[in-house]
Image (cartoon, rainbow, N blue to C red; front, side, top):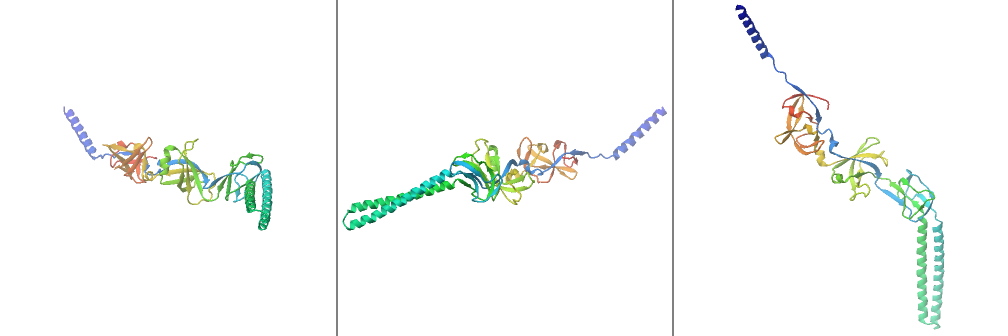
Length: 355
């Protein structure tokens, strides 16, 4: 019996000792690993992206003003030319023959006028001697006027013919670079048929195509950035032109951006990436949908301060399948938890995983 009481006393002592140790042990705060993003670190997320190419502000499509057979090609693609330089030549033999015929007609008209004026002088002398009537003199005066008009007509015809002959030379209308020429000796071309394109020196632009669902956004965009694929350089740009009607083949709207800044090294035909951003998009911050905590119809995010998190109310401007647009409540550069938002509480200690 005494042994039994001793066992009970020993058990009680052990329990008392364990209870004392338990009181001395402090609970360890849980540290939860979280993934995060930096608000505003992906500014281009909400921007419209397009591809384009560098073009000249002024591009001329050159054509002969008369029909004929090409006999000479004076320049090649990519060649720099000056205003008035001959690019190609047509066979002008027919036009020269026509000019010769018109010159002969002009000589005949001049001789006829000279004869009619001499006759008029004699008629007036005869009238003074009463050998002829005034009616005959008036008729001769009319003949002189007709001959003078014929001379003017022949002169105009000769001028026009000479112009036609000069049109057999295709001239550059400005200093620039021949971006394309399709004139080859032996070709027979019609009047007005485009055979060359000339990119004039001066301002450079970026041409790109806008789909119909982005026309309004591009028209009201507050800023444009153009990144050149060749060297990665980024330039500011402004919208200069947006077509009012869609291209019948592609159903897209042609737009042109004027490049601003240093144009050195910018070559025609370079590929460019265009980012168009509206003022509203610049002010908004985009987060993954998993970063938003919904409670009682209000929206919150967990902001990371050091090794702890705090709940912060935000205003949601829009939601799509890949992002949430936050219009108020956040500033760029803040660290925001992007996963497990329902498992956190204010003051929760966290460790950061790689984003």
